[in-house]
Length: 193
Image (cartoon, rainbow, N blue to C red; front, side):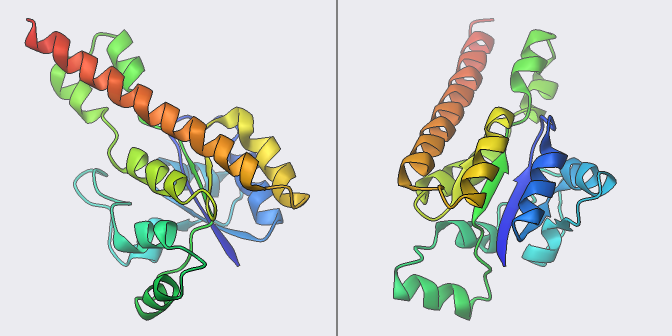
């Protein structure tokens, strides 16, 4: 069974997307508030701690930063040594990541103080996005709700080809680059005070 990891701040359309993935025989794994939204919406999602064997800690600051997540994303499916390692380590492949990032921009718009701004810096999200995008040949990375239906259709019709995967990886890296630039700019403005 294929596995999708779904962890989003913007929950627009995510329940329907996860239901579509389930209909395509994906097991859905999720975190925190996304897990609750999915379960409330009737998705049979499992918590990330069932994958990692480790609870979410530090008020949710650490939940997906784990070898059982990133190993499942980054291993090369056509590399026998990689395959052997994940089998030995009991790491399940992750075939799709659906992730968008903490709303740093919204905190910025409302003029949040420094401690709140810092709490709105996503660490696990960009890490998962970048890992999935690096291995785009084997892992679909979905960062925008407006791509949900196209991705479901592509999987259903066996059209989730190299070009689609690369386009989604391009979008993913564009998002993480813009996100990091926004945070960097914010820190620069704080130094100028």
